[in-house]
Length: 236
Ligand SMILES: Nc1ncnc2c1ncn2[C@@H]1O[C@H](COP(=O)(O)OP(=O)(O)OP(=O)(O)O)[C@@H](O)[C@H]1O
Ligand SMILES: [Mg+2]
Image (cartoon, rainbow, N blue to C red; front, side):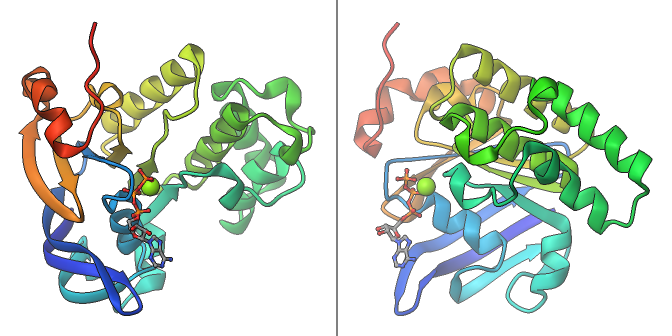
């Protein structure tokens, strides 16, 4: 379980997220909804030990994020908001092969994993294509493929749907559902309420603070309140 208790964190001399209390259990999809600059990515980076913790606690399976960064990074991986910050290899094949290679798997096992994930992300015929020539949406899918190749216990997905077309969003939703069914704990970050329909509960952030926690079943009820939190209200 991911547990944040009265957590205040940020960068250097600037606390950005303040007094956050949050739980993410295994097999649970937790949404984090907030306006641009509300602190969503900062909270996500805190779970990986990349920010400065001023007070309070962040623990994953009882391990303190501040003290045991190496252990934490075995448990959690993050889909970055901007895929270019995540992808470094030359080809899609290499991106998907790095994690299984580091785990010491055989060439055949690595190829099996790469092929399975490439099929999942719809890139089987592009395995040897150059990553930096892909479109934004294609890069996002490859980045999700990289996470699947790592297969951590907890997935942090920072704006996984943003910039994706219908097919891309359907892929993300299907993948997130499958992860939940496999017992993974998932933090799903978005500024768009329509991307959070799969969530068990949704934390709403405004200016670095959690201002509301909503049960996923009641997501429709919060739509009229969205503008007061600086969020876009979809009308159908
Ligand atoms: N490295 C950094 N150093 C100092 N301040 C930062 C740094 N990164 C982000 N911030 C500040 O932290 C605040 C929250 O940013 P953050 O990226 O967490 O917001 P967000 O909710 O993810 O926004 P978005 O919806 O645009 O992705 C912003 O005011 C931003 O300027
Ligand atoms: Mg962000």
